[in-house]
Amino acid sequence: MTTFLAGGTGTPKLLAGGREVFDPADTTVVGNTGDDVELGGLLVCPDVDTVLFEGGDVLDRETWWGIAGDESTTHDYLGDLAERAGIDPEPRYLDDEQQTAGRRLARWRRFSGAAEFMYLGDRDRAVHTLRTGLLDEGKTLTEVTRLLAEAFDLDVDLVPMSDDPVASIVHSPDGERHFQEFWVAEGGDPEVVDVEFRGADDATAAPAAVEAIRDGPVIVGPSNPVTSIGPMLALDGIRDALADATVVAVSPFVEDEVFSGPAAKLMEATGYEASTAGVADAYPFADAFVLDDADGTDLDRPVVRTDTEMTDDADAERVARACREALSRVGAAEVA
Image (cartoon, rainbow, N blue to C red; front, side):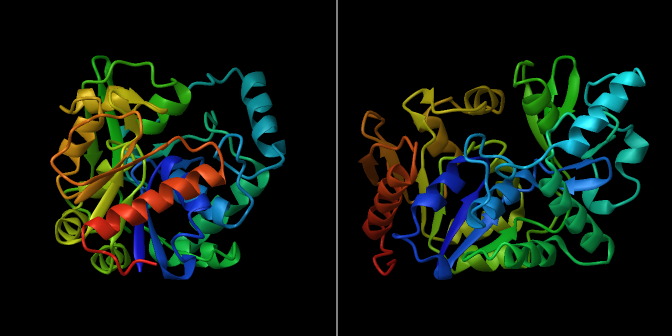
């Protein structure tokens, strides 16, 4: 059994090319849910859905978001109606009282659907509608995710990090905002002074996620250490399980240059150097690292180097083989 911690696009890319390296039938993927949102009453799980759609061979690989070739009839007409009604198109985060009302799993994640700042295609929306309906019937997010994985014929076991609400909140000098507002609506432009994982102190790690980590070894792909992996590390159960597991992490940096996304800004805001060295500090549980050939960072743990840029599945397979080599160096030679 091999377990991957997945957030953003880095780990899904690694999974897409790693099927010849790590047997999907013996692979569990723990998805980040810290950047989930409730938009217009529908629970959207971006990081879980990227793994779901990629594994189901429907992912839009141009954006690594949503379903390829999806129609946008509802999204477009909603925007047209809102414009004609004179509704501000900016994200409409509901007030504090409404953030803790209604569906518990949506706490601190609730946006009005009057301004749909995230693109939802029609088939994509159907996934969120089914997910939300099953949650309202009383199923846990783990149960619902596995049902959706079955519908998409996934060959890995996909589970969320928690069945409880944990929301990634970005703090700026002008106030706080949900991560999706910061990243999707504002393009990561606002200054960041801190990142909070609201609800983490009261949330419990999903039992399936903890079991998978304990059954590892574990691979942390080149995801954003703060908002893709940080919400998982904020959960006692996952943090404790990682401390006992054999873990290999792939750096999303080449020394102090990040491949993509807001990781550098967010790491500096949370007290880490924006570099591979900072990633190592953020991951004290990691037993070994996979770094880029051009990354000369000297770490106190075993390192395997390769070209870590992943532009296609062949690149991802190369990085996956480097992960397997790193695992073998720290006593996980049984990994096939």
